[in-house]
Length: 133
Image (tube, rainbow, N blue to C red; front, side):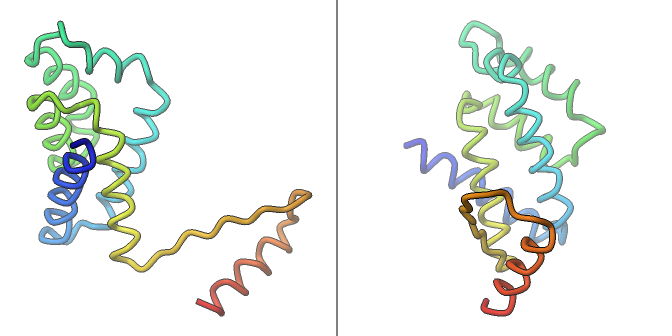
């Protein structure tokens, strides 16, 4: 069920981004908001608290994000809170980020090394990866 929720909301946000031609800017906003929410567990826990009225949750979200995030992203956050699905917000934002990477054909590579790579080694590795993909 959670996977369906994350996909539904994440896909809806992605479709709006494509239709409005704001994929890149919305992607950057989502990354920033996602990071903020991950750093502020108490805020997220409060927004998930079952005894906090929905109106208050919406008010808290609007107070924090209105004017700082796009109306599309703020609207998503408010809608998710109104529907009682804020516990899935991490997954929704992660789904959107992954969908944009897929859309832009951006891959992710993980490198494991016994020692930390120098800047020159990182640049060389990045160059080789770009050449092969």
